[in-house]
Image (cartoon, rainbow, N blue to C red; front, top):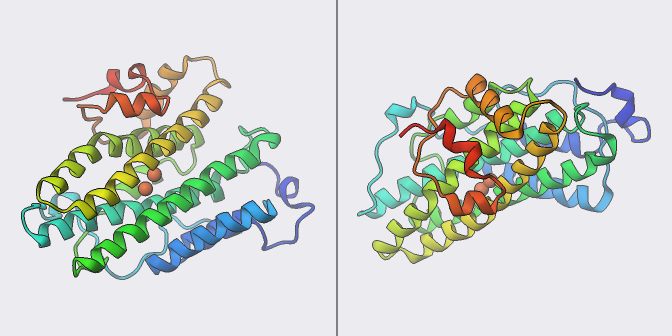
Length: 283
Ligand SMILES: [Fe+2]
Ligand SMILES: [Fe+2]
């Protein structure tokens, strides 16, 4: 349950603060402008630490450009890395994930910072963590969009799917489930698949793209770690073990598959032990 409106905004002018800034990120359709707003939001937060008022309504879908066309996941063409076109298509798919990730971090701030399961004294830490994630995702998107430009591709040139946003959005009214699924299922999956992708780019001699992905990979470990930290914070407030709580939430709220093999090393670094994900795995 959100706290009463007045409890967060009494000392701040309306229409100011990080919660409203996060909503503005969600409402910005142009991808590079969205990334700029995300980065600006973090700078403002770090310099002023103003929470401000709870936005009255958050969009079910974030604002997006008219391209790329969104299609069913099965209709996204397969990407082969042998050609520059194939490399461009794969990087385009990753850029689309990063754009979703900007919105997911902004939504985490705007929707859940004011949740009554976060103690008031911990709210600034929660916002700092997700503003930092949002800033990283914005930088990741821009790095990929710049690399796509170098390969003669623009973001929007290839079809994409909306599966990531839809998977997270089923938890828009369940804070612990959102933390379980967005960082600890979806972003953790990125840790499993990215090293293989980096290797494929290296194998075809595209070391520039491989380096971009390697930077992203390193920083994504930190995002899963932030998710794990806040999940454990919430898990302490209920009687189940953190692992059993995670299993219950994922089974109830995630319709996709939890696929192995897992990148156990990176997941462990992020604070996610095997006991969280192995019992849920489908081969
Ligand atoms: Fe990212
Ligand atoms: Fe991330």
